[in-house]
Image 1 (tube, rainbow, N blue to C red):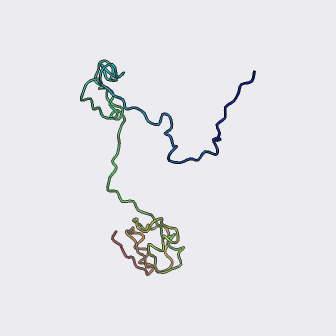
Image 2 (cartoon, one colour):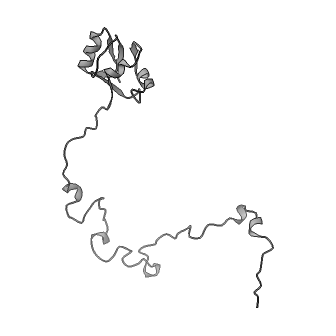
Image 3 (cartoon, one colour):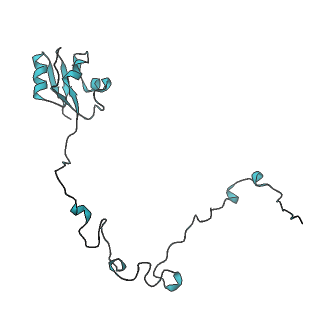
Length: 163
């Protein structure tokens, strides 16, 4: 005995989708949990807090990492050193790097263009590693004493820029 299969006059692919026939997916709207409204709500009596203890009481705002009165792990771990919030991060450029640039005037824009620093808006410091062959005019935020003396001995000049 064959079963008859009923087919609708319109197939699913030919049905026009529009605002008039859109439906919310099943399970998209979840009912709000109603607590403390009696046993009929399913969340009555203890209101999902359990029977006894600190978390069942009102006013139970415990900080993150609270371990029930035991000394928390963060207080057991040894802490060393000091990290300043006002530390200045410098981009370091050595004199040997400046020798590769064949221009007499070295600005922050030129250093960024040549790839010696990543950002001209951040602080730059020139260190004295290497020798200066040609007289240079250097613009920088700060410079070591050794580098400044090497540039001046080669007949150059240093300009300190305030950030």
